Length: 475
Image 1 (cartoon, rainbow, N blue to C red):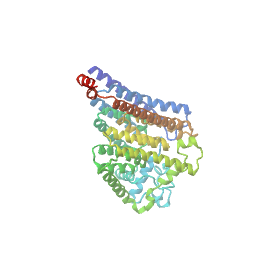
Image 2 (cartoon, rainbow, N blue to C red; image 1 turned 90 degrees about the vertical axis):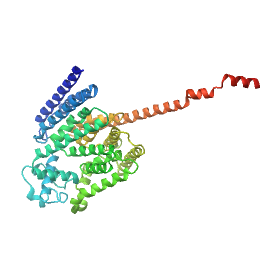
Image 3 (cartoon, rainbow, N blue to C red; image 1 turned 120 degrees about the vertical axis):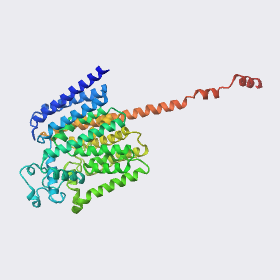
Image 4 (spheres, helix red, strand yellow; image 1 turned 90 degrees about the horizontal axis):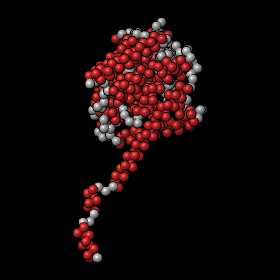
C-alpha cells in the first residue's frame, strides 16, 4: 500500500514538474504582442502546454493518491506555477495597467467613472510607465465598484506596482484553491481534485501572468457556493452580488444559488443592498457610474449580433429583428433553466456547482465571448461537478486557450472560433442528449416497475385451492 501511494505521489510530482517547466519556458519566451510566429506553431505550443496538465488531471482522478499528501503537493505546485510569472511583464493582456491607473485616480480623490485617461483633467496623473500601456484611453473605466475597491486598496498599499498587483491577485487565487479543496471535501470528493483548476495553464497565465481580476471573482463565487450549501442566505447574496460587481457575467450563475422559501427574498435583499452600498462611494458620477460597460458591449459585437457564434452560422449579417429574436430565445431558455432550478432544491454542494456550471456553459455557447480568461469560472466549477454537465465544462476548459489564436494573431483567423465555440456547442448538445437518454431510461424503468405486481399482490390476487373448489361446487 505504501509503495502504491509513493508511486502515485511520485508520478504526480513529475507531472507537476513538467507543468512548471513548460510554464517557465513559455513565460520566458512570450513577449507583449509576440504572436508573429506561424499559426501552426502557436497551436502546437498551446496543445503542448495542455499535455502535462491533462496527464496530471487524469492521474489524480484515476489513481486518487493519498488525500493529505496529494493536496499539499497540488497547492505547492500551484504556488510555484504562479510565483514564477508574477515578476514578468504581462504578455497576453495589458488590463492590469488599467487596474493600477484606476487605483491612482482614486488615490488622487477622483471618481474613476468621471473621466477617461485621455481627459485633460487627469493630465497631471500621467507618467512614462503606466500611462503609455493603457487600453481604451478615450473612455472611462469599465470595471464595477467592487473591482475598483480592490484597485484603490492595492494602490494605497503599494503604489504604481504591476508586480504587486499581480501578486495580490495570486494570493487571492491561492485562497480560491484552498476554498475549492474545502468544497470538494464537503462534496465527499478528493480535495486534490482542486488540481483541475490550480494547475490549469489558462488560470496560471491569466492570473499570475496577466494579473486579471477574475481571480477575485472566482474566489467570491466559490465563497457564495459554500454559503449557499450551508443555507447562509445573507452571505450568499452578499458574495454573489460582490462577484457580479467584479465581473458582471458572474451574475448568470445567480439562479443556481436561489432556493424557494424564506431564503429567496433574503438572498435577493442582501444582494440588492450590497449593490447599493458598493455604488454609494461613486454615486457622484450618476449614470456614468456604469462606466464604459455599455460601450464595451457594443464594441464586442453583442448589440450588432457579430459576437453570437451560433447566430453567425445561420445568418452572417443578421437584421435587428433577427438579433432580437435570438436574444429573446436565449433569454427564454435561460429562464426555463432557472425556473427548473427553483422547483427542485439541490441536494449537495456538488449539485449546486453542477447547476452553476450548466448555466455558465449555456451562456458561453449562446454569447461566445471574445476573451479566453472569461472561462476561468467554468474551470473552477468543473472539479465539483459530475454527470452530463462535465462534457461542456471540460470542453471549455480544454478549448478556451485556443481563442488566443483568434484575438492575438494579426490576421484574426476564424478557425479557432470554430474549434472553441463549435466544440463547446457540440459538447453541450451531447450533454443534453445524454441527460435526455438517462431520463427516458429511468422513466421507462419506472413505468415497467409499476406494471409488475409485487409478490404480496400476486399472493393476494391468487385464490386458494379451497375457495376455488367451493366455487366449482356451487357452479
